[in-house]
Length: 581
Ligand SMILES: Cc1cc2nc3c(=O)[nH]c(=O)nc-3n(C[C@H](O)[C@H](O)[C@H](O)COP(=O)(O)OP(=O)(O)OC[C@H]3O[C@@H](n4cnc5c(N)ncnc54)[C@H](O)[C@@H]3O)c2cc1C
Ligand SMILES: Cc1ncc(C[n+]2csc(CCOP(=O)(O)OP(=O)(O)O)c2C)c(N)n1
Ligand SMILES: [Mg+2]
Image 1: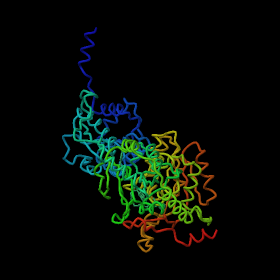
Image 2 (image 1 turned 30 degrees about the vertical axis):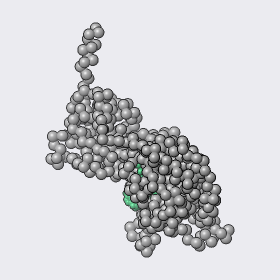
Image 3 (image 1 turned 90 degrees about the vertical axis):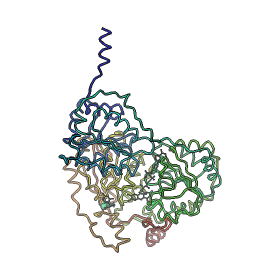
Image 4 (image 1 turned 180 degrees about the horizontal axis):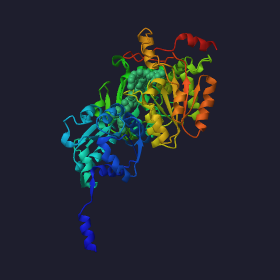
């Protein structure tokens, strides 16, 4: 009897490549995948029946990638998207580039034609590893079942370690169909050239501590890296001990509580005027997990001219890429902050903080929230009311455009991972699918989509996915009848030539109802709060079409390439109106 058992042990069980895909994903802890089937990936779909993993059927392969991305950003884990070869794979390109630009860890699995016909223009063949080479952290073409397990393990490791990013695995149909022995342990990643675990030297730490100790007008620039490395607590201790105000990038919002007295708000093109002014006048910038995007710096030649700069960053390629720095600390932010905290002496910068209050006061009189109610429905009002109603506790997923900037300005983010938005690529159509991914990751959280009337129409078929998955997600369309952000650029820089920006929109309420989603239109300010309340109380998803002021403008604005302090502010006539009241 015992002898028979030993013999069975020795004859290792064979599995198809398709089965191995699911076994590996299960071992990686994957619970949900987002995908769309087709011929070259059908063996994998056939083998799904033996898996505990839940497959979310999307309505467009691009949606699958944004959902995986939203899932990753909401959870801190890795999102998984699946598509077939050819058009399925190419439809993923925008979502992969979006994840790459924002360092979001996703693994995309695509089917490929049989290995024997690769290169023959076979039906639905496309060179997706070639196409995605510049927009993935790494990618693979797998043509043997024996290589699937190792590749999937490596892909997950690469996607989430170091600076996170998307990894694509293209698996030929015959690799999915053929059988081999599945050995998880033997498939451990072997990546000798890959070094995601760098750390600074003692000398570099010393230089940084000395710069911080000597600064009179320091500003922390906190970015997305804080959220990635889960360094929120360390950031808080650092800022409080050294008494340094914290400016945030768009992707860093939520990394430092909005209500904290040291929180400055968002920096950059549509950042608050006081934030940009303080950056320009600082004598030390402490950049933490942010990459000095051009939306953040404006004209590099005049950027923070009198400031020494410290850059804490995990990716050595980011050091001195856009802005030359005095000290670079290359490593994981949380680890680096912990080390810095050991050495950091308490300090006070009361004069500098008084100056901040003074600058804030000047901006407050220009703030639309403080202006008399003109009877118009402004997007800023809608978002401010949404913030009040949800007490800042919702997970908001925004699209790209003016509404995205108003959300960043008027929804005060208290918590990490409470805003998901496409920053680097600025991908319209991101919000709805990304919110679906986020809700799948955090089913108990209140999720709001804030989306423009233009961007919504790019991925609105995913409403069907939302309904099929029975997800309670609320959608606030900020409907200004324009491709608003482009219209704003035309207003400022193209003599109001509104070429191709007015939108003829469908009836969004009827559209939602066609999907079985409750919906309402709002045209008056008085209806905003009650309609938001109705949505929150409703036992299911709800779409609200907020018909807002059509030619409204996001202020302040630093014109692209201009000096950061040269912002276009809200016209003075409004300031005078405010001062009169
Ligand atoms: C219409 C529009 C307007 C915009 N306007 C603005 C604006 O006014 N202000 C603004 O800020 N942005 C704006 N953006 C967004 C902007 O384009 C960038 O996406 C954003 O500034 C990038 O923020 P980030 O550098 O924090 O994040 P990322 O681009 O995600 O960079 C994060 C950095 O952190 C590093 N990192 C990751 N993990 C770690 C770790 N564990 N340890 C250390 N480092 C790590 C990464 O290597 C990377 O360099 C706008 C976007 C759009 C679409
Ligand atoms: C896929 C894609 N195409 C084009 C653009 C350029 N673009 C940036 S903002 C914008 C207008 C967005 O309009 P809407 O969704 O209505 O939002 P609004 O600005 O009006 O709030 C456009 C066209 C983009 N960012 N993404
Ligand atoms: Mg619009």
